[in-house]
Image (tube, rainbow, N blue to C red):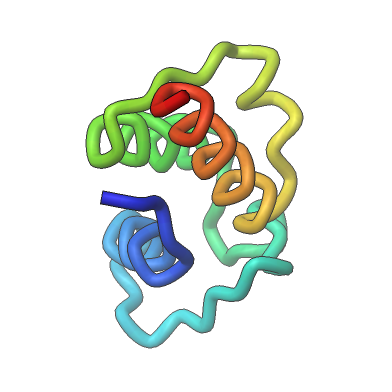
Length: 82
């Protein structure tokens, strides 16, 4: 399965218990209502499990937007397939 915006957005909506939350690639994690650093870790862990990836702590620390996470996940998956 390939990482996609709908899948990542679904993970975030589920975590924040808000199915109507509008999520785009430009959505900044810190701008999400009720968001904290542990939420980012939870989202990354879900992405890792769903797409069979691994993120390092420094990589996680650099993620600012949903697009950052998605781009990193797609890149990691492409490298693993090469």
